[in-house]
Length: 219
Image (cartoon, rainbow, N blue to C red; front, side, top):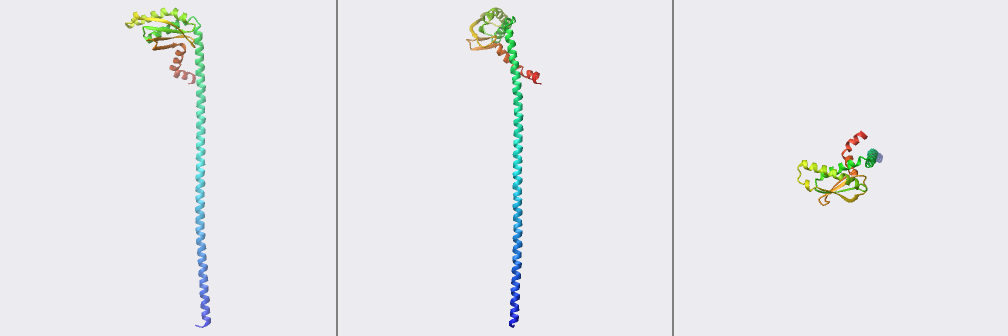
């Protein structure tokens, strides 16, 4: 092989090496480009997922806040309605209290007081009962007491009670304060007490008739 042939073969080998290097570089570049695009796509999708999750979280927070606000609004409205209804019930009770005060000042009160005493005696079924009257009403209580005791004894006799002869009803000098009318009865050494004042009877009547009163007032 002469020198020219050797030189030509060397040139071909160099050309081959260069070509292979170019192709290898191109292959590396393409692979790097693919990996970059894959990583870029992964990052984009991850960011999209993060944004979607953040949006869903904020949307959920907004919905929760909205529901809480609606619930608070409904609760406030209900409380307002209940408050207004309670005001009406209180006004009704105050009106009834005023009527009772007028009744006490009328000539019908003595009869009512006698009925309250008789009712209290029957409920206690006591032999020795002391009765407290409202301040300023002791005279009225003493005036109706004989008739009330007679009615109580009649009731006891009809019932066949053996304690009729032992019945001893007295008026206690300790007056009731802060009441417009009625009585408080006590027996068994003041261990058993029955509050039969008009205020207590009114409160009891309001409680018993509350469902009906609500239907009438509020439907």
